[in-house]
Image (cartoon, rainbow, N blue to C red; front, side):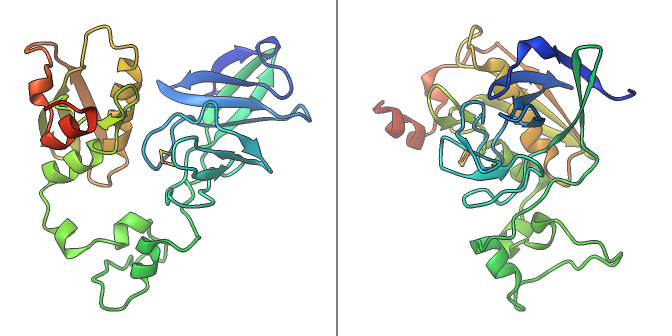
Length: 249
Ligand code: FES
């Protein structure tokens, strides 16, 4: 049972129900299907970080409430736009009335539906880094525009952080002014960030998603997020776009 983490007892979830749990601090959605079988997937939409917790489930796939991406519950594969990357799936064991999970060794699936990105990928004029070991390359590893190529690591990390949305204000954490500093040392990223208030109920989720957004980048192995409450956040830190969105002038 090495590597498996106990997440619940079997009487906490019944057929047709779902349960939010954590594995290695990552939010995971455990589902018991009507036939009694369990599946478990990362509870974070790969498109823009929305929890999948309450997403409708149909034909073995869960739909993200926010923009409608669908993910295969068995493989984590994205089945439609706007998601192009998969979500992690988990191996499940039941022992002594307890449910244990561990991340599946299978690679996270990427999409095979047509997207602007993978359509461009097939265009010969686009610069590509072709892998030499015969392994299929991840979409983002070979689809690098010249503009992306010229960005510094810190700029790429800020772009990644921009995909994390504050679920209450529906504004990304960069434009909201929550990011105080972005640094790196080799493949380690160090972020100082704050919350709109120390008691922000979405704080743990935002911090977790910020870390995951960075660790999805090939150039980051580990991201350390430090919560800083001084100076405290104020609306002055928001970009003009964020203010417009909230109707603050
Ligand atoms: S956040 Fe899930 S589809 Fe956009």
